[in-house]
Image (cartoon, rainbow, N blue to C red; front, side, top):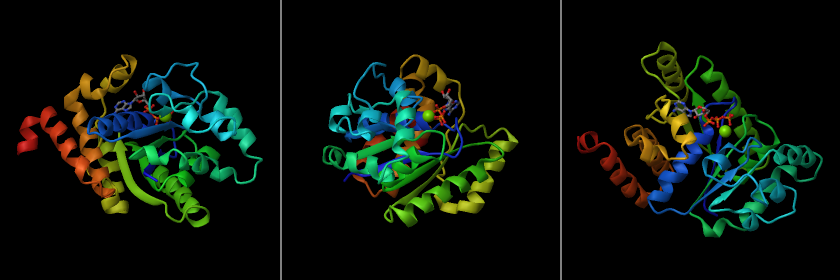
Length: 267
Ligand SMILES: Nc1ncnc2c1ncn2[C@@H]1O[C@H](COP(=O)(O)OP(=O)(O)OP(=O)(O)O)[C@@H](O)[C@H]1O
Ligand SMILES: [Mg+2]
């Protein structure tokens, strides 16, 4: 199976979907074959990656056994829509309900270098399915006063998945997102995560910018819309690849970094 990363957070709006979308884009640009999985009934990732709203089958069909994962892949993404909320409810009453996604993805794993799963903003059954299907969990935390607590709660769910169903699950790290280091709450969030989680905190933070919403609206990647800002995600992608021990594609990321910030990269 390829490295499978679940991107999650305890609360909503921490930039998970933007992270999955942008990292998918970066990793594809350096030649990796990446499958993106939208596991959120809001379907934001599917929108971002320009899947037609009526695309079918979706992840809901996969989880309810109506379609295989292979059938549900549209241009490198398994999309989601509101129907997934109902599927989650129905899944709740089934045996092996936590293992459903893992089993489904196993069949398509061979075709990809990496699988990225975008979780919904709740630590419920869908997120547990992601954590059981994944071998790595990446936490996203918004730079707010309660960032620490959110990370701790998400970590508890990761531990639970590891202790009961997926002993191989590793915590890849936490990325601090939507950060404005000029503000005290951003600096405090960074410092407290650093104190508590040490190296697990990814050193590069994702700066806050309206450009993310704008680029999503224009269906344009931040790499093209604001390459200077995209340096943040390129650094994060590089660090993730380092942690995954995937050294070869890091060269491609370094090259993209040189393109977007010639001065810093050579410094
Ligand atoms: N670095 C950033 N700076 C400013 N705004 C951002 C940034 N990243 C994402 N956003 C914006 O914040 C909002 C939430 O982002 P996103 O959808 O990625 O979060 P999410 O964690 O997936 O949300 P949800 O929990 O609802 O799934 C969006 O409007 C997005 O454009
Ligand atoms: Mg989202």
